[in-house]
Image 1 (tube, helix red, strand yellow):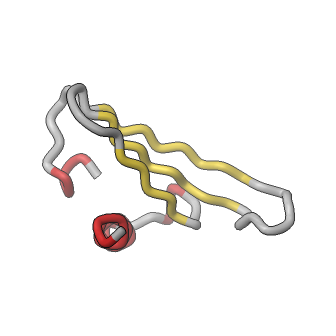
Image 2 (tube, helix red, strand yellow; image 1 turned 120 degrees about the vertical axis):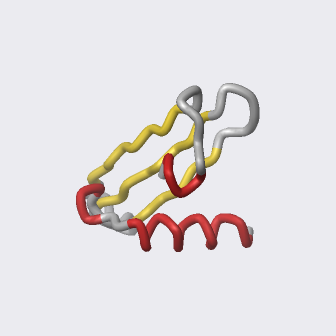
Length: 68
């Protein structure tokens, strides 16, 4: 994510993986949050394990986020 967005070292990237057992939730999701020192935080949710997320998945999430 850092390379795709061209982030500097002062920008935090937090990756968290969640498991759900409640009906109506996907069984697992990974949330990527970008927290710049100055500016707005951004968050993307991908419905797959963190270790299965590819660069293509991240780019697709970015494109979808920017359309909203």
